[in-house]
Image 1 (cartoon, rainbow, N blue to C red):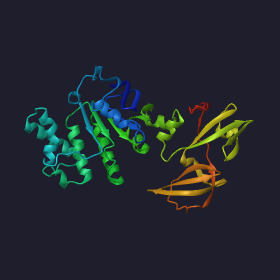
Image 2: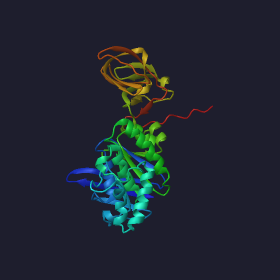
Image 3: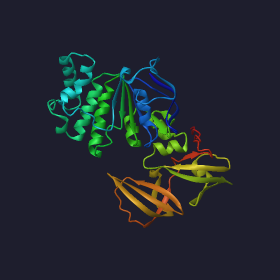
Image 4: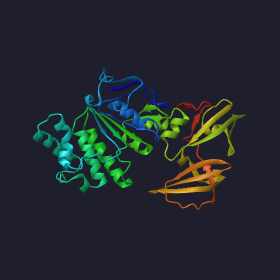
Length: 354
């Protein structure tokens, strides 16, 4: 178990991590999900000893790392950049960390050759990095990290500089490769909610230098604890709509009045925030909205709308070209709606008993 306890990191007056307490389990791939600047890279650098901490503790299996230099920490790290040694062959690039640890060159090369075969580069061991594609260079960097057999592997958005199709394929291969490392703690940083939720056995949501929620991906997605967590975990963006409950009615700010029972729960009178995911807004209905932007991604269409001054995002599981400025009819499906209180905290829905 890798444990971070009350960890804080700052630079000048800027706070990059603030009082973070999280744990990472062996044999699990944990994704750190958050926007750029959320603290993901800083956390990894702190674990690796590359960022000086202001307070808190980092420990692996109870052993405190506070006084360990970076080279003394059993960590392997892969970053966004393709960091390979241009003058060495692919084989020697991967063998290099073992040779530095005084492993006999023949044994280091044998281990490197095996690892390169596992990442699909077994036929390219004599090439130089400049002779490889971007995706192949990142495979070399991953092989060099994994060949060390470090108990902690840090992957800081390793595929962000690759095109979508290549990134998707490498991601699947990496997950399969890492699942075989049952004693390894793997931490993977991402800004992409879909990637983080699909890859991880566990997910930690990061925002403004804090770990705001953690757990199994399906649970975190289904029950984000706050409006901020809902924003971090949602792609396309979640619709957060102000809501007033009064006299058995729901009044959605500037949008619609609905019977309170539409949410399937009893709410006391007061102010709330309704969380409505993009797939719960559909064409056809009593509301009207004007199209401000249409984005086609694969076989899906994300449409940004304005309805009575309220910005909305709609997801359609098909390719649709909505012309800019077009007015379309909408309906809201509240069946999967989330409700947050005035402080932005999730109000759990009461279980339905047969």
